[in-house]
Amino acid sequence: MNHHLLLGLSLLLASSAALGAGAFYGDPPDATHPWAIHDMNRPQPPRVEPGTNGSAPSDAIVLFSGKPEEIEKWVSDKNGEPTKWEVKDGALQCVPGSGYIRTKEEFADCQLHIEWTAPTKVEGDSQGRGNSGVFLMGAVEVQVLDNHNNPTYPDGFASSIYGINPPAANPLRAPGEWQSYDIVFRRPVFKDGKEIDPGYITVFVNGVLTQDHTPLEGGGGHMKRSSPKPFPEKGPLKIQDHGNPVRFRNIWYRPLPKRFVEGGEYSRMSEEATAKKRAEIAQGIREDAAKLEGQAKMLRLLESLCYADDEAARSSGLSLLEGFVKDAKGTPVAKIESKKGDILNVTKALRYLTKFKILPEDIAAKKDLEGIVKAREWEKKK
Ligand code: MG
Image 1 (cartoon, rainbow, N blue to C red):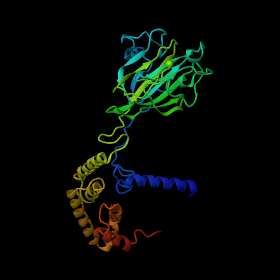
Image 2: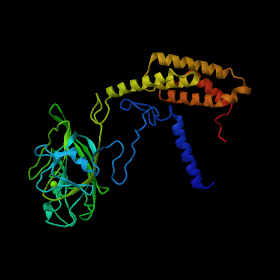
Image 3: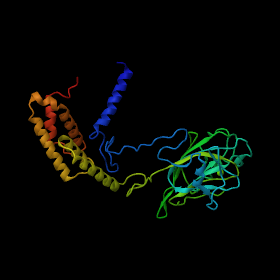
Image 4: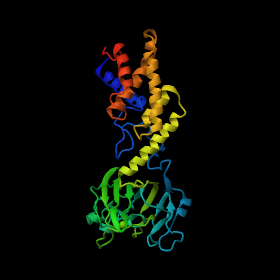
């Protein structure tokens, strides 16, 4: 067997061990982490079918995919009336002079995808060439501008947070080619008039990072320095009419959950919220244990103690453990091999539980089982 094959095999074994191990594997929960490391009780990430070439993933809300009737998801920002922007060749096109458009839909924290292209016929310079803009919550402009060989003030550059922060790079394609913006937006959060989070924007332009978790300073804007301010709960997405027939396509967003943890500090769990969550996880495991029997029930009950102690679960788990040990000790040597897997499994669990002081170090069951393991030389290196 060659080295790479061996490495591959050991990786495979390591990952299947992680999968199969479930409980009693990684470090247990602590005061601010309700889950163990590599915790199989933790919910699996929800399945999302990805899109292709900018098309929306399965859980996205589509604002424009190229269909003419999707114009009805947008209105004129001036008066809420139907917009004069046009859908042409699968693109939503700005009709200069008709004004900004906004979505009827209102939302806040999101992942937004939008593609745009500046007119092929190059006209104007600086801010006058292929100018539009994507306004998150109708307030913060991620600049749209044809900056292909077109210098301008950096905080007004394509993918700048207009008036706040220039982009870190200029990865624009030539006018007439499609440019993609992938934006992660977090609104500012205030509590009792105090800013507890300034809000952030991350932007990728054509796959290149241009805004890296850039903090907001209010809404930004033209000529005036803006300062932090609270935002409403939700707002529309607006697209600017800056007098250029910029075209857009593949506009969709995925709402992002609030990063607040109920009863917790911002972005991380408080001890109080962690304790509450741990009690909830322990309860779920005990409900699962109630449907099981024998060794599986015992291990599940003992596992629940890693999250939150409970007298009934502890005494029921320990009583099952006592029965298991009694049975193991009473098994004749001729038959003990058939219980090797179970005994090693429970021994491993007891080592974990005592190591992390969930059960007392001197628990008799551990000594008894380790005695059998040692006598049978089950852990002797080959
Ligand atoms: Mg603009």
